Length: 132
Image (cartoon, rainbow, N blue to C red):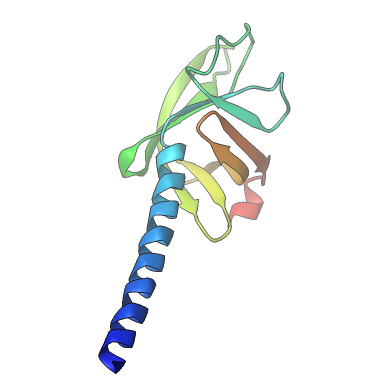
């Protein structure tokens, strides 16, 4: 009988760990896409690039998060041109912080994720200093 109880407890524990891992994977899965700043909806709202046709804008922050923690992000050039720069990203699951870094591993931007769903990324800009 004791063996049966221990087995049952072990199975519950493994199921809980498995569910927590799936939850973490789903956050990473949801993050891995191209996000576009939808400032018409609010200062800290990003939408997937295929969410809608965004109105024309002088500069609309865009960043794409890919497998292997690689990313690209839109940069405004001194001549008012725009180009995509390559970098990396990291996600602190405990603090819910998304950080985008350039090739030199310097912080480009840092967000606290307030809401993350298939069609919305709502963030609080933490500034470069608060990321360390």
